[in-house]
Amino acid sequence: METNDPAMKSKYHSKLNGDTGLVIGMLALLVGVEGYIIYNILAATWEISSSFFYLYIIFFGLVVLIEGIGCIRVRESIKNHMFEFKYYD
Image (cartoon, rainbow, N blue to C red; front, side):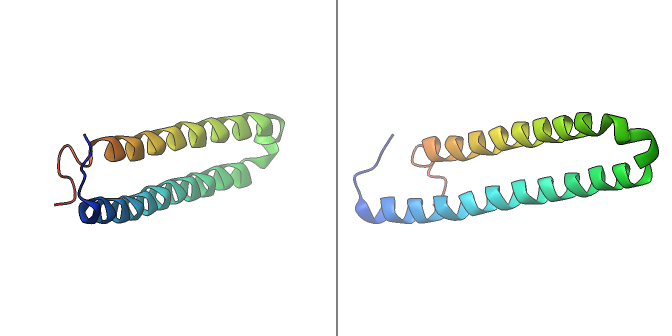
């Protein structure tokens, strides 16, 4: 559902940009924390895990990909329903 009021559209789209920033920040925080954890695991167990290094990279990549898809879906959901539910009023 769309609205024809240009002032409301402008307000909602600027607030959507703010929410997009929050979603990107959340994703960056998650990736940073997970990267730190993977780094600590690899640093502590390098002698054992050096042969499995590529599995860690694949696992980390899949986790980041799944989280990225989730964050994109959250933003799209907010965008699709922001006028319908009067999300920013």
